[in-house]
Every structure is written in C-alpha cells, then in structure tokens.
Amino acid sequence: MTHLHLSDASRVIAGIVLLTIVTIEFGGYFMTRIVRGAVDLTDFQKTFARAGHAHAGVLVTLSLVCLILADATDLNGPAGWAARLCVPLAAILIPGGFFASSAGRARTRPNRAIVILWVGAAALAAGTLTLGVQLLLG
Image (cartoon, rainbow, N blue to C red; front, side, top):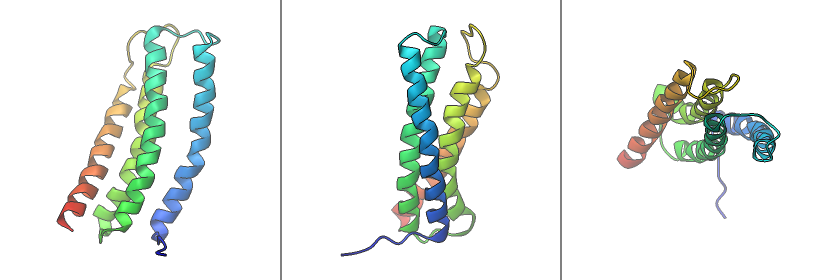
C-alpha cells in the first residue's frame, strides 16, 4: 500500500482549510434560515447568499485536491506557493465577495465590494493555471 506524503506546507494549509469548514457549516445553517423566511432579504441577496455558500464549499474541496496535486509535481518557489495558496485564497475571496457586495438593507445590486469576488477569481485562475500547466509539462 502506498502512503500519501504531503509536504509540510501542504499539510499545514490543508489543516487550516479543513478548519474553515465550520464556517461553511454555519453558512448552511444561515441558508436554512433564509429558505424558511426567517431572514428578510431581497431576491438579489438570496441569490448572492446561495452563490457565496456554494462557491465556498466547492472551492474548499478543490483547494484540498490542488494541494495533493501540487505535491505530485516538482513545483517550488513562487510557482509552488501559487499552486498551493491561490485556490484556498480564492475559497475565501470569492464567497466573501458575494456576501460583502450584497450586504445592506434591501440591496438589489452589488456594491463596490464586488471587487473582492474578482480578486478571488484572479487568484483561482493563477493557482489552477500554474498547477495545470505544471502537471501537463510533467
């Protein structure tokens, strides 16, 4: 049986990412309150809450996979850090952008905090492109 060996960096990042799942669970509880009508939100805010919660779960899972894949390559230095950190960073920034840009009473359009979402999208692209190219190059 082969054992998976994570680098120290990936092990620490994975541990931190796993701890963030509690916040996603809280978000799930909050979503149940929204669905039950216990939270007064506009349709726009409900949509952004759903999107933020969904992106958080998916990107946290993807970030854990990326850590394993990064350790399967010989990436080190700045590219290695980009491959390991950019997707977990996106898992914070993209949902944060959805939530922050829809905050406020009776909001029907995103506020300027939407830029957080786009910074997260750039981090996601940087991490996945760095890792994907390295995996293809071998």
